[in-house]
Length: 324
Ligand code: NDP
Image 1 (spheres, protein in one colour):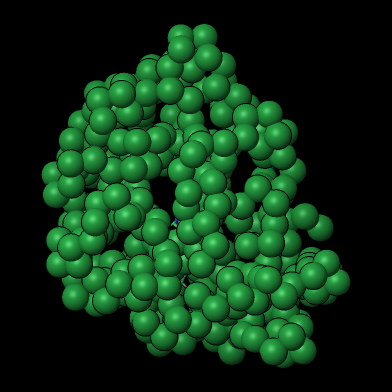
Image 2 (cartoon, helix red, strand yellow; image 1 turned 180 degrees about the vertical axis):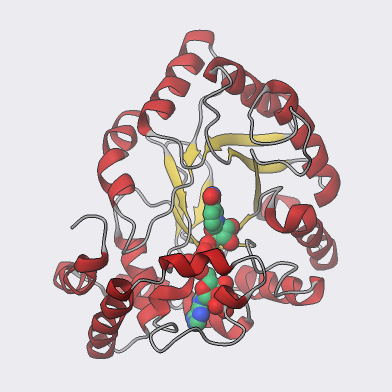
């Protein structure tokens, strides 16, 4: 496993990491989650991604319980959570990043995890109703308190990130260290264009999500929706809106490239992510051990991908990409 600095911070994260969205609770029990995490850890993964809203808090509970079962040294892994949507309906309990929501959010998350601190905390979306100054101040205070080690954003616009940096600079607060954006062969524009000056100027690290576009980039949806796949998980049916003909056709073309290269379609899509500039870690999702083992091989494949292969991959998928 290769390790990369999370932007300009000193923290090293494995270039592949493991996330729990959809899988923990819906598809993986505590025992299965622990087995998956151990397999990832044995392969060198040191970053495990989570959020308060995943399975309505159950994902944090499961990860916390798995960590107690696994009994790894606390210094050997990095764990995250994210705040925004909340779990309750009160005016300060959902869809916001005010000081009260964030301070309550970290307390509740630590309790569910059963941890003294988490490493990375993210503002899961931006909150245009709360002054950015208030949000930056609260995130900085959480880091100062020791309840979290670094803070960052997820899916903020480049303009919002810039404002957050300026506020932190002005008041000598902790600056955001990382952004968590969606990044895959279909969804490239924000990462490669909108964020490019942000990466250059502020040196943010990135923990990129849905590198397989929720599984579409494995090619598994080429002939319909397979039983047991994410798009059949109750509550996840909305993901089917993303399953468009142009994407299915693109994965079929990508399958030909993967066949020439000698790997699976998903491995090629993950390896492509690993090769792209400004990616600190690619967060894997896996609903079983076989998927995880297959995906872990992406690191080795990335080492063999040269510019000519990257060009073939991008050509195969360009008609379904937001860069076209
Ligand atoms: P992917 O796009 O890689 O999708 C993962 C899913 O694809 C798996 O759960 C599985 O679903 C399917 N899959 C993966 N590998 C294989 C394989 N080898 N063969 C067949 N099917 C496979 O990643 P996620 O969408 O899960 O995102 C990764 C992480 O990013 C999340 O866990 C979460 O931590 C984070 N995230 C953050 C967001 C944010 O807003 N900040 C939003 C979304 C995710 P199945 O078997 O059910 O079909």
